[in-house]
Image: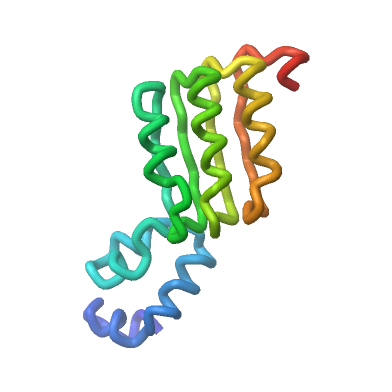
Length: 143
């Protein structure tokens, strides 16, 4: 298909907006939103990959809180504390998000943060939850 329809602009015209959404949802990647302005306007914020730290985790969580456009979200957090983990729990309110990946390896969330993150398992629309919590000083109380 794509070999036949060069230049790229012609390819864009051959797929409807709904078809681009289906392809992006299948890939679960933000890569297609960066192809051109048309795909950016169709797919923006649908599949996100973000980095956060203790100084901006509250702001990031507030910006995404209740956003109906987000379907998949991957967050790499560095240096987060239990309070940062608690802020990430508010992501459970993103209404159409089906996949959530949190890589918090090497942060400082401890037992309290791990207990807070346990609430994410009850997020109503999340069907795939992946947590990386290695090297976070989590003891028996946080397990």
